[in-house]
Image 1: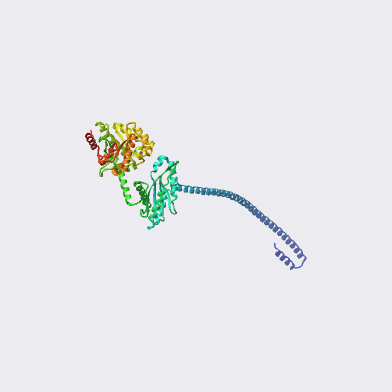
Image 2: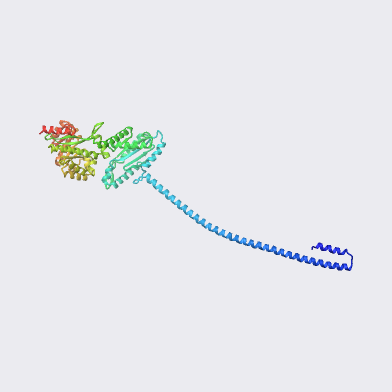
Amino acid sequence: MGKSRLLQIVLSAMNTTSTDTELILMNTTADTAVKQIETESGRNLLYILLVTIVVFSILFLLLFVNIRKRTKAEKAAINVNQKLKESNKELEKALSEVTATKDALHSKYEELKKSKEIVKRMAYSDYLTSLPNRLAFVELLDGIMATIRQNEIVGILDIDIDNFKDINDTLGHSYGDEMLIDVMHRLEELIKENDYLSRIGGDEFAILIQNLTDLSELEERILEVQQIFETPFRVATREFFITVSIGVAIAPKDGKTTQSLVKNMNSAMYEAKERGKNTFCYYDDSINLKMMQKLEMQSELRKAIEENQFVVYYQPQINLANDRVVGFEALARWQHPEKGIIAPIDFIPLAEDNGMIVAIGKKMLYEACMQLRMLQESGYHDIVIAVNLSARQFKDKDFLPMVYEMLEETKVDARGLEFEITETVALDDLEFSIATISKLKEIGITFALDDFGTGYSSLNYLKRLPVNNLKIDKSFLDTILENNSDQKIVHTMIDLAKHLNIDVIAEGVELSEQEKFLKEINCGKAQGYYYGKPVPKEAAFEILKRLNSENS
């Protein structure tokens, strides 16, 4: 019960009649009220206490729950933190691996870059001289041709060493390489700003010359190149003189593209070789026409070998003491189905260059042996047939076995066969020549030294070569009637040969006066149009029978 209620009761008692009874009742009522108030207060306190306990219990429970939650959260946070630390370590490890991989990749990239540079350098550089090679030369020329103006003059020189194969074969490739390096150094001394030197082949160099004012300046530069070869090269403690053939092309006149310009430069170089080597040649359209004709002939030549279009013509050789035929020189002729008879001068050099001379020579030897057998079977046992040997034939590794096999197959007496070689061929490798000639002489074959007097003509060489005959070149006979010097030279040659027990055949006799002079100086034999031009085998046999019958 509240305080307001207690106040009402007190006020009510005061308004009542002040009797004792009323007072007693009032006291009783007051006590009762007080008790009620006390009871209610106690009850209220209990309620308050219970509420407080409940509140504190709830608060405690909340606190407990909160503490547990915080503990779990802290544990979770610790776990998360631990995981974060572990993740960080893993990330650091991964980062380290990525960095290492990046470094490795960078290192690999640098290696590949260097390797690429090395490969490029190898692809664009000559292994021996370290000069730019043909590929580099062509690429540079590509760039120049892309920007060249019509009024510009750019010269390109194709410089090829003459007979370099002979140097390699004689001295060996290591000494040949030394000589190439020496050539490079000499050429480098001529190179000016904006010039470009490269090695475009085994014995072939190219120089690109820019900023030329006129063609006379280009020719001066060409002459400078020729002059550096006037000084001998020293290789293997010996001195050698070498020459070069130079092909010259001018851009843009001689080619609108790099390919055509390089081709024309190369064609001009081969034309320089055709003209005798040790010279230079400017490109012109006629050179390509000539090259095309040469290629066509080369193709036809191969076909001629397959179809056996070659025949042998025979020119008589006369004994000047009795005017009798003592032999024939076998001469190759190409019986072309459309062009008719083609002389050796028109196809032998080409056949020599491309190696087909070996096959042609074998066919010629077979035909000569068969003709010789026919003569021997007809009773002409003293007649000799002379067969020319080219340098390539003579040096061919199968030459000796082929000769032995041919003699066996044709069943001829080898004493009726003679081989003719030039001084140049014989002296190119003297020891080899001596050995080969000696082996064939053992079975009866004789040898003649052709074109004597036009080559080395060294007495020392002549003493060592085991030849049976000297053939005096036609060039001496051409002027022998009006040139006293040539008369003396021919006379000396004959006397020299006699002292060495070598017979002499004079080539190119066309006049009776020439024959008379040769008889006067005791020349042994003669050959030429005066006695008969080269003819087929049937006609040659008739000449033999007629002349030997008339002079029996």
